Image (cartoon, rainbow, N blue to C red; front, side, top):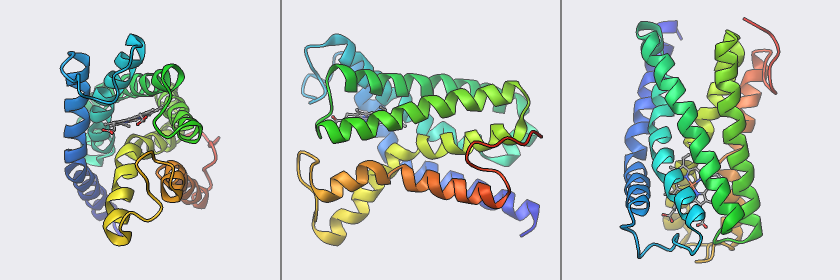
Amino acid sequence: MTRALASWALTALMLLIVLAALEFVEHAGRLGWAGLNGEAAWSRFNSQIAAANIGIYAHMLTGAVITVLAPLQLIPVIRRRLPALHRWSGRVLVVLALVTGLGGLSYIALQGTIGGAHMSVAFAIYGLLVLLCAVQTIRHARARHWLDHRDWALRLFLLAIGSWLYRVHYAIWEPLTGRAGMDFSFTGWFDQVNLWAFYLPYLALLELALMRQGRGLFGRARA
Ligand code: HEM
């Protein structure tokens, strides 16, 4: 595949992801906004702990934005033709990813998840990885380690769309199997598998792809 064709294919894939994720993004954005404005009294995410409420609703709002921003950030033509836009939206993405990760982690620490310890651990590791990848992405950009920057940005992208992928897995599984392994407290076997399946396999596949380029598993070569 020529470079130009690969670049258009990547652009099309990213736009497709943004379009497909819009319904979830709207749900997350609306619920986050309503919760922060005290207009979601009906929501199961409200607790007596104000900090937990702010954390979970803020994470939904910023999470909605990063689900869209992360794929757009990978579009080659924007990076090449509008580098200032790429830099600024990159900084915004990193800050919002940090808020998303910290908001989710604060809710887990203060309130705990609906699925209990297993869900809390899986989501907490997910949140810590979001924080790590956000910090590494900007750190390597500032140090002009472009290959490391790209690798960490790809990891961050997979994590940023991970929350949407979590729902996509359910959207595929539910009609195919009639809710096999699912229950309403998220403790069915499929629920348990999906707690890890929405980010670990995708990260592993990325590492394999990077290894084929002589990189992966946290890089070292500078370019
Ligand atoms: C990447 C973008 C993200 C988006 C768009 C997002 C969005 C959402 C939404 C909409 C919900 C509520 C689900 C519902 O309506 O039932 C939720 C729940 C939750 N999210 Fe996120 N999230 C994101 C990332 C994260 C991260 C990085 C963490 C890290 C800790 C996290 C932790 C949680 C937790 C703990 C819950 C509550 C689980 C429960 O008890 O039901 N999320 N998220």
